[in-house]
Image 1 (cartoon, one colour):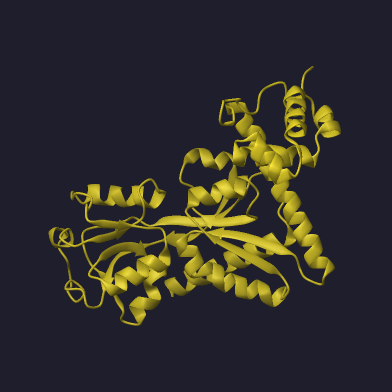
Image 2: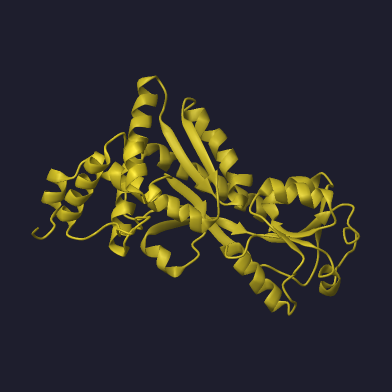
Length: 317
């Protein structure tokens, strides 16, 4: 075919083509894709060849038992997912509003955000739009940005973890995310005014999984304190698992203060004073760069910023 152009793509490409690409990317199998789309395998094969002919390159490799996505094909699949997710949200919004609702808002947040600022902001926006349906996802910042890229989320509250991410996302800071070293109230270290690092290293630790941005920052804190990273660990991303294990066993954890503030007030957990410090890093509102923001999403952003300002003023006073 000739050079790919916007007009040729717009005149020819259909939603069924995008559904095929997304389905094949999940199944990596022509037969399974045909079953899920309720089409014959020859029809699926013909449609894929037409798409690849239009684009001028292979989207999937043809191996004996699978069809992995090619390097260029990854960009096509990402586009298909974005468009299909937008279409899905459009249908949900229209159907919700047709029935008297106020549409949907899909939010993602890191653990510190879902503990305090997101719940309070949801309560506030529900006063304005009682019939607004809100989905909340709790994940690490990297996963949240992946979901933003795929248009699975309207906005996220997290952190930029790499400088290059500024090319794709706008970031509005909400405030720092301080961490603390915490144990349950029965732990032998709980009532000490200061705990030496050598003593802390004797106990099992609860940490975030390896490879996550927070874990990398934690490992940096151990390195700066000149102690080895604990070997006796439980690694999880589940806030519920963190708290249940921490309150039931003599463990040590490094967690966001917002996550444990209520348990500390209730006397169930105690914050330790040590030489191990994880520097606070700002978290904030992440949105896709260069894309319009809906009225509902913008209202929620305004509420988040207003609540963050109130929190900072209260901290200062």
